Every structure is written in structure tokens, then in C-alpha cells.
Image (tube, rainbow, N blue to C red):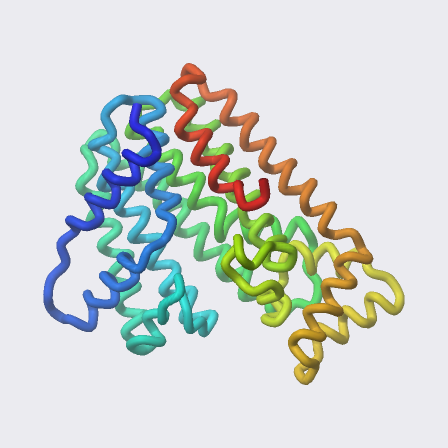
Length: 324
């Protein structure tokens, strides 16, 4: 068994050894820029750890793990363009540093490079891995479209929001773990359970991210609180607050999210006050715990000795540690 640190070292070494053509420079330089500006590497490390859960050797999982990281970064490049975001990981986004056309084309190239990396997988694994990869790739597009659709809808339900984050965020964690399990030659039942583990963990992670945007410690979380509020983003907090607020509180909440002239600090303070009045924080903390427990229940059903689960369990705890 490899430790989380060893898995990380092996992945970073493989990533550093990826070779890209020199020309056209404006196609490949942005790709290298986004891939090597940091990131937690959560998804590829889950692939490697999942493979190692069932098999000692993880060599055959390296290329799929690289493919997942390249594909994930491709989605970030296009998301940043759609969101008109200027900063990613503390540095300029690709479309901000170059331009939107460069961002679109470099992102397209990254999606193709991801498939090229997948094709280097041992033949016996290619078909099931491609099926899994295609499922989450299309799912992410569906989730992103739902997210954009929600911008033009005044109210959405908790079920609608959960479906969106299931597709946009959680499905990639599910797929990353399942691909590792496939290469580890796990039983079908274990591939299924580790997929549920990743899906519910991903939902819990995104709900926690929503919560921390408002109630997180800026020194720990690394962001100024209230960014989602200022952007009028529909998160689990706004979904819950709009469904629970009554009378003047609901009127005020509508006003705050419709006004284009209100002071930023005042808007954040007033919205948080309504969140507090409607007790959404406590409800969401319980919701996060529910999804986390669902994830752990699936993880516990995976039929390998508990000693082999320690590394992946530790990675899971680290992913959720910002709220624990």
C-alpha cells in the first residue's frame, strides 16, 4: 500500500513528465500554465488510491489519473470563460492572461489530450473506463447547463439544486474512484459502492463549499466571505432561505437579490441576517452530515480489509476537514 504522500509524489512526477509540442505556442503554453499553477489534485489522487485499494501496483492507473486531471482543468478553463472569472488559484485565468478564443481552443485541446492519455490504458480496461469517462464528461456539461439555466429562474427547489451539483461536481469524484477500481480489477459490487461513496462525498463537499462561502473562517478557507451572495449565485443557502423566509423577511431577501445599487457590505450583512433568522446554517450542516454518512456507509460496504481502507479514508477526511 502507498501512503497519500507517496501517491501524490508519483502523480506529480508523472504530471511533470508530460510532454507538449512547442508550437503553436499560444495553444500549448496556456495548457501548461493551468496544469502547473497548483491545485489540490483531489480527483487523480482518488483514482490512484482507489486502484491501490484493490491492487498493489498502480502503474496502469497513472495515465487515466493524468487524463482526469487534464480533463478537470479543461472544465475549469471553460467555466472561467462562462463565469467571466479573472482569477483562478491566485493567478490570472487563461482568458484573462491571453483571451477568450485562446481559452476556448486550449480547453478543446485539453479535452482531446485527456482522451489520448486514456488510450494509453491497458486494452482490457479501455472500454469500461471510456464508458465511465464519457458518462461523467457528459454529466458535467449537463450540470453546467443547469447551473446557467438557474440564473434565469427566480426560485429553484432543493432537489433541483442537488441534481445540479450531483452532475457538475460530484459525478467527477464518482468517476475518478470507479476508474481506479476498474483498473484495480475490483468486483462489480465494489465498483458500484465506491461510486456511491464518491457521489455522496462530492455532494457533501459542494454543500460545505456553499456554507463556507458565508460562514467560513477567511484565514482557513482562503476566501472573503459572501462572494456567492455578491454574485447572486443560487446556492443551497439561498434555496433554503427563499423556501423558509416569510413576510417582510422574504420581501427583503427578494429586494437584496434584485438590487444593483446596494452597498456590497450591507448586502452581505443583510442576507446573512436572514440566513440566521431562518436557521439555514444548522439545516445545511445536518444535510452535509447526512451525505457524508451515506458516503461512509458505501465505503464500509467495500469488500476489502479495513487496513487497506486507511489511506482512502484519510483522504476523505482531509477533503471534508474544512468543516470538521
